[in-house]
Image (tube, rainbow over all chains, first blue to last red):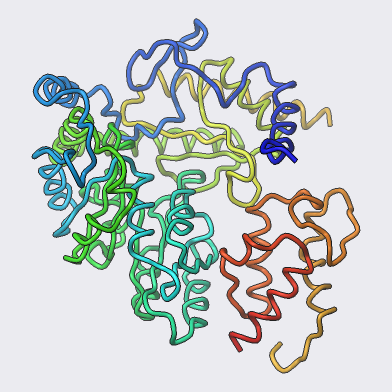
Length: 402
Length: 87
């Protein structure tokens, strides 16, 4: 029995799928970036339609300038953690700005969005008296946060407040703290949570709500505060987590709350304390992007206009989409093999989307996950639609032959 | 459902019935069958089957417990224990 035996089944599966695949979907290398929506891959210019660059701010002039300026003024890295040596005034300022933008009193900045969830969940809930309840489709970082916490973790059915209600009702009086974790918009299918109903159910049982708006921050709600704003319950969310690596076009993460005790996490959250803080340029870029989002709704409007166009086009082509119009537009394929083939067809036609297969997807589905950006031009979207048109022709031809 | 005293065998058969649609290779299921290794079911699909079991018996089975379970027999035993605790 070697350490590596356990990888064999997955390695074999991947190998057999790759044998029939001209390219490896999981090791695409961008040889040259040409902007927020274009890159050169193996000599071919492709449209990037799988990134999480929802507001398209990775090349925002203000953000680029601020990042360059920050490197010159504050250096390339902090070489310290938030807890010691690695908190500069810019880190604190961004915490204040995020809290203000979202309408919370307190905010903590982490080094990644992954660590924000890991750090919040593992510190808030502890074994043996606390219980964490998570939506079945929650992101890996929420599952990992539960594991790091060691607290008893119970899954409820995806986007099903009644299923949560049942599980909260079953808990005995020995349970002290209850933490409910869910997401605003789910990254794979792009479906949105009924946050208002979830908050009502959780609070009825005296549970706290942690809402991950990684993919919905900047995208949903009148001011871009996320799905909780759109649902009118922003002020009832106990812990709001988010990331800089999507709409904020940088890297880092945060937790915001109205509970003053959030500050306790600064000396009790291991993923906050025992890793280096975000570099000055990351912080500067996120701060500049936040400023832009606070004062300019045009990116959000563009994003939704683009999303509507793509969703309509795909529906007309006969694709089965996983959710209503939104920034993530995933289409279902029959199986892994067909999904690999379809992904290759799109690459040949100059479009890079994300291939996702079980167990990384809900309900054991194989999907092509496309995400729309505010920076996608009409040209970009024309290329996307024509690539999917070619794919739909191949699929219907194959269906006829079968 | 409550009131009916289900014996070990009935829980075993219920679990087999829920796993059957995922048992693509038609492996014969016993108490000693390793759910993930023998049936080639991925970890997430197993969690989804457990959710059906939870609703069927009106109990909650923590993820922590599931991650320690390897065989069908262990799952049957865990369900009996939780049913006792939560009833």
